[in-house]
Image (cartoon, rainbow, N blue to C red):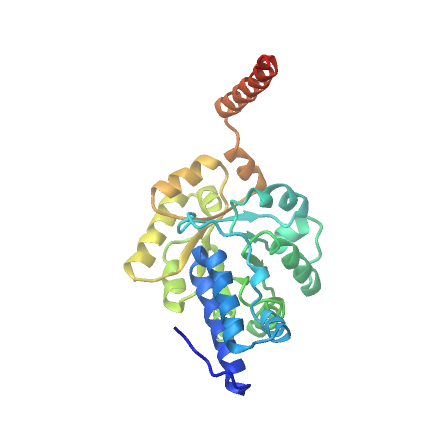
Length: 304
């Protein structure tokens, strides 16, 4: 059992800070610790170290407990992203709890009539992170320095939860490397060939996004390319995730999952397609009818 001298010694607050940061970091690693046991540990730490409420509040600005989005403990390794900048779609679909994050790019911003500016991206990130754990948005610029500067400015709001997308071009990769050295999370995007997974794995970036549907449109076998990319990162022992994008239907998601790919971003239309099953709708309606009949039966039971 941990014991601390009762003297009002500065080391008590230092120890409290260490405990707090330790437990918060553990929560980042293991979502299963987000329960009453964690709260009890924090409470005990406060008692032992005399860390006051104001100190905890200041620490909370570093990594606040309340900022954690819902992350189901049995989700496993899969990560689903909704691929749109339309906030009306967010309002409808994000509360379902199935999405790890939101992905956007300048084209999606334009389609949703959202300005492609740093300030607006920060506003969108604030909204998306109320429901999810990650917000991906793309940097822009005609030079390495411009892409780097915009990526730094976009991610400045929250470098733990904002992921910067960078095209997998020579200039884009150089900018991504500079951003990574500053602690910015990276997704290489606009990937059209499995060999580009070698770039992502060797750089050690977190994501690379192949465009499955668009590869098919250009005469390639997009599914096979994505499978090969997964085999490449697995073969190299890399933790880079293959974030499959440009998905046209829900059945392709199921096929990708069967092939061992676990990270996708898809449109609201594909998200809604996941719920489109008439037999399920019919069964749900039958359950509701039976429940209603059961309520009537209870009212007919004579009083004894």
